[in-house]
Image (cartoon, rainbow, N blue to C red; front, top):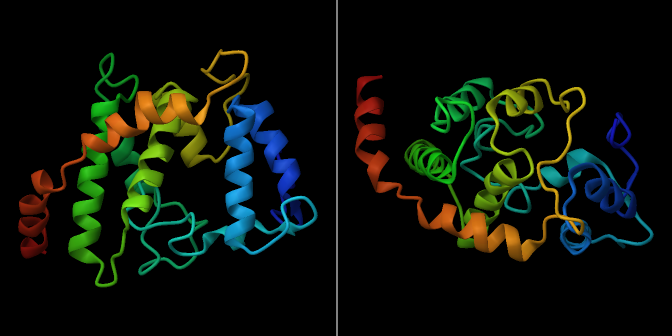
Length: 208
């Protein structure tokens, strides 16, 4: 595996290096991500370790209206994927007859999930920073994995990289935060419109 399969005693510095080598995120991007996790857990980035389950901290990195997991209100163990959400995410792909997800597809499914979560979760919370974080996660699927549904199906459902997989980012210094945010994250977030799904979600709930 990329990191210890036990998910325990992981060095922040090791994750920094592995993210860069495996996915070709830019060095500064990797550093920011692991430093943020260390800050969130009140640990030393250079000296301490963490367990994967610790980053489940609600409204830390984990947030409501995930595309792949139930809200913490309904599933406290955020390591548990929710297969229906993943299947629905992949079904929203419109590129090349459903072969890959595009920015507009991600905006649509995020709109739906946020509307559903807001309507069904009595303790729903999502600050603007969490929305942008969610959009950045979605943007990474588009940039690192090319939005390709066959690869994402393996990654999200089987939780492994496809055999022989390589990052779609070919730039020598990797995917930078600036490139991800300006080209993908912000356009994706700007395309989110929960109101387009609010009525349908209400109607669906009334029929249950």
